Length: 124
Image (cartoon, rainbow, N blue to C red; front, side, top):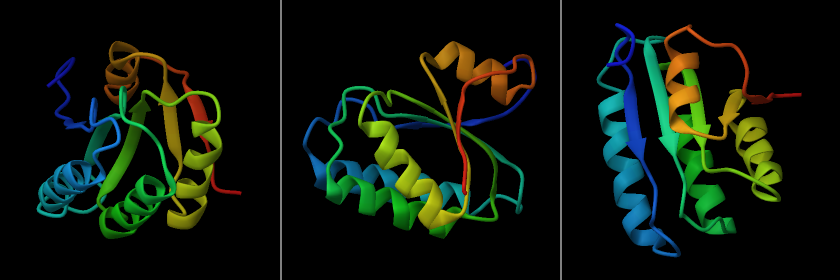
């Protein structure tokens, strides 16, 4: 809960190169998301300290497809540099925009409609 808005914090941080552990966490988050009414989920995905690879990108592509229709707004922290190109691939594949933030506080404010901003990774 932040500023009176309920959101789902998806802690995908600090998995390093542990794709199997990350997969288990992503699947658990997806299971919670699809229990919610459609187009209501405000989600914050924290990827700080998790290494991006083609396996990780595929994992998030499939996650985005599974949860499409349930997620109203999604903020992501922990994406920088070349990872932004990979985030674009996930957005394009899932046909869902992602909004990237430098820190979790700004992401939570955006989810609660208290702040504009973030870098939009749109679906072109």
